[in-house]
Length: 524
Ligand SMILES: O=P(O)(O)OC[C@H]1O[C@H](O[C@H]2O[C@H](CO)[C@@H](O)[C@H](O)[C@H]2O)[C@H](O)[C@@H](O)[C@@H]1O
Image 1 (cartoon, rainbow, N blue to C red):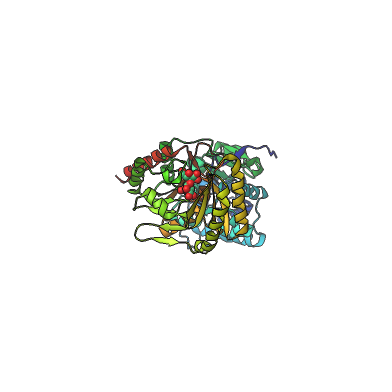
Image 2: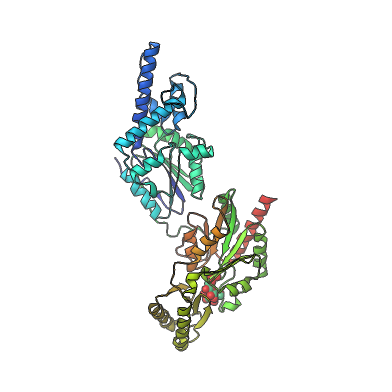
């Protein structure tokens, strides 16, 4: 058995890995195979006796693997019986397990399977558990799919139900009318639930019908797992890579995934629109450094008329919210478009059209401490030339853009001392700025998630897009990781949780214009 790495999975190339369950994650492929053999041997023997024919037993190699493995239960029955030229009525899913119908035989197999599961339990393959955990740690979403309607009890019995971001099984397939393997429907549905597309997703399968489905669905890479299956049939039927154990697949952090490849804004808008599919974008934008270039003095960071037009145009087609570190009143007056939604003070103070307004209580509790810290800062920063305090309702920013380089460490020291003295406050950083904020679990990410819920932007119908340039925006990129899209605006970013990078505010403007045009065409 070789452990040579056949593929290293990183988040710059792939958003998601979709694993088949039986035989890839859990050792239940053998349990299924034995249940099928029990059913068909019993049935074929009975038939042979009745019709005075020779009994030809059900073979795992020649019958199970090509006709039954990986397929929905009743399709498997039909497909095998056809191969033996046996024609019986389809029947109905409510058929008794003793009925001589496709559904009846399928139901009997299910009884045999559940009985075996009860007595033998379900084991997880250790290499699968290791890979799934490592993928999640590297920011790659994972799904498990199964044609079986029993996947939940199996995953529970194996103790791995919480390991996956989503799952699609035989029950979902019936509810949503998804075709079984070798059709790619269940894999496509899993990619959709992980907020991505087949061209950014990997399929990992041990069944021939499964690799056929992956190839037919045009998934970025189809990996065949030949634990028990013949490697050549997996590659001839659609696997791009065949492994005998999942230890041959590795994953690594993609530090500069998006950074390595800043994108043309028009291409970025098109790509995100493709990714949205039928979902409507909801656009959340940071202000400084995203909508306006960074300048020496905060009051000079005015919105250009062209950027205002781009926002107005986009807002005709979708929700647009501004999520800023600035005080709510400040950012509202800088943008000056009443129809938008605003979250000021990093999301502690939120206001929108139709009287919507919330000031977070947990922020209010820190107000007395912020006031004392403000007074202390005024005294202590006296000695630091050009240090500038910006008092906001739910934060105090200290700007050091004009502070001589040799005094910046002293200034930062003052910030640390104050944060240490007031545990109710926390120190955060940004572009030539430090801030004292309420020391509670609330940031731009929480604010965006709160807004999505408040505005009823259901993830099935809306794709949230967050655009920002600074450290505090990383919280929003992380919060939207498996729910939406993050765009970092920077020409010198080293690491980010965002999915795409635009280099400057001019590119933001072009992106917004292009997105508005795409949405306008869609509604025309
Ligand atoms: O979340 P944002 O909307 O990006 O706000 C972050 C901070 O932006 C402002 O400061 C930054 O922009 C200034 C103007 O370009 C620049 O002079 C400063 O160095 C930057 O840090 C704003 O003044 C802060 O209140 C915001 O927290």
